[in-house]
Length: 264
Image 1 (cartoon, helix red, strand yellow):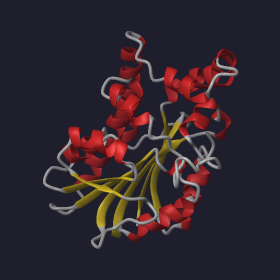
Image 2 (cartoon, helix red, strand yellow; image 1 turned 120 degrees about the horizontal axis):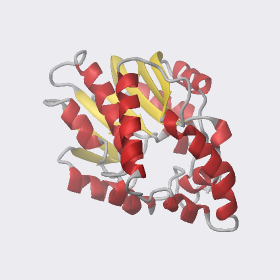
Image 3 (cartoon, helix red, strand yellow; image 1 turned 45 degrees about the vertical axis):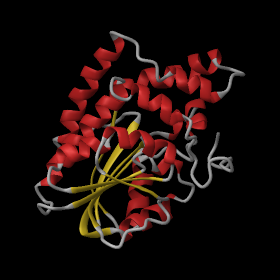
């Protein structure tokens, strides 16, 4: 399903039926574990610059998989999870005692600004990402932090992006420009998940595309969420090691995802 076919998913390009599948695998799947490691270490590094009782929000928190990591990285802070889908917040409530709010990114119902906002694999689902970033800038304190992850490399577009309701994959330059236009100052960016790049390109562009030709993209995408013992452990180890390096400020020149840290 493309970004322009969102009448059933209004107003974002996301299929809420994915939440049940995600909740079942996120704790063990290598991709989520490695991304969480990178987010946790990045937030922990920024925590020293936050007030002791800082306000932190994750916009598009879904099942709460990352939300509990934010709480761990910032003890004593007010941590709020926001998602437009009740289906996702239902799982988040089971995972965390953080405040949860059902709202869209274009109409955030907050009267107090946050010191840090995380938006993890959300912007690619939003048709007007420029407006979304401007709205996020409006609910950040001056010099507040924004942490973003998005899928990288337009050349990797495949059935997986269609099934996921993506509007785009990002280049470094494109994401940097979007952040600048919204009034942010980019502090750090890096691609990540580099060990996956050859396999993802080969599978999604050639092997998977052939195997799943004629089948619904959603079915093919669900297949990539399977946990394969052995391979899952190896990739978890490789990607966690990469996450440690990037969180210490060492950029990766390539990958399948993109991290950006910016200030308002």
